[in-house]
Amino acid sequence: MTFLARLRRLVQRTVIGALVVGFLVVGGTAFRVWQVAREDDRTHADLAVVLGAAQYNGVPSEVLEARLEHARRLYEQGVVKYIATTGGRQPGDNYTEGEAGRLWLEDKGVPADHIIEVGEGADTLGSIRALAGEARAKSLKTAVIVSDPWHSLRARTMAEDEGLDAWTSPTRSGPNVQTRETQLFYIRRETGALLYYHLMKAPVDVFDGITL
Image 1: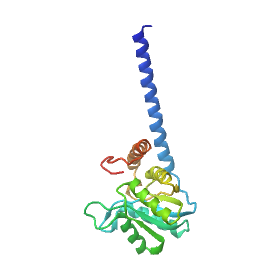
Image 2 (image 1 turned 180 degrees about the vertical axis):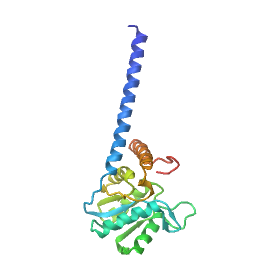
Image 3 (image 1 turned 90 degrees about the vertical axis):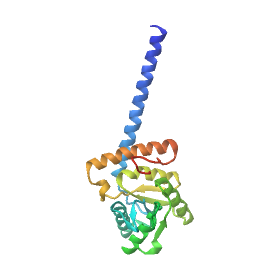
Image 4 (image 1 turned 120 degrees about the vertical axis):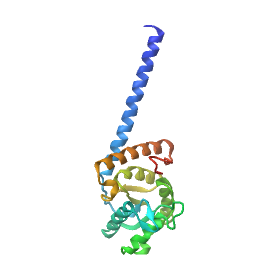
């Protein structure tokens, strides 16, 4: 076998090996996103962390309301002592996502002194970092992450990286969890976003037009 033939075979094997490894990494990550999405851990925690979503002049969107309602139920069931509402404001907004969440919870009967409003963060990582700082200041160490199922693994990973002992109890209602097509879209999106986070320790600036 000539040198060029050996080199060609080596390159082919290297490319095939890289493709196989890439497939295993992406496939394995997608499986974990799906697997964690199915978990609903009701172990007692210091607080439930509601990841922010759109709000309209202080009124939560359907997505955010579904998360808030789930957290409220956890609070009423004694799973958590506090509920943290997170998320900053978009340009032109009068309210932050965290503020809209707090107002909704208060309107539903959750005592104000059991709500921790963290109106910061333009993406999941920014919100988690702001929340972790607030939790440390209040000596709160355990958290159950409340978001959409497919968002759970990435949010939990970020929370653990910020020093919280975290697990997940995702909402099972809302527009993001209703159809198989929607589920496949978010699994794909979250797989890419989680791999990017593992690589860069940063959020994807724009992924499918949405800041993550």
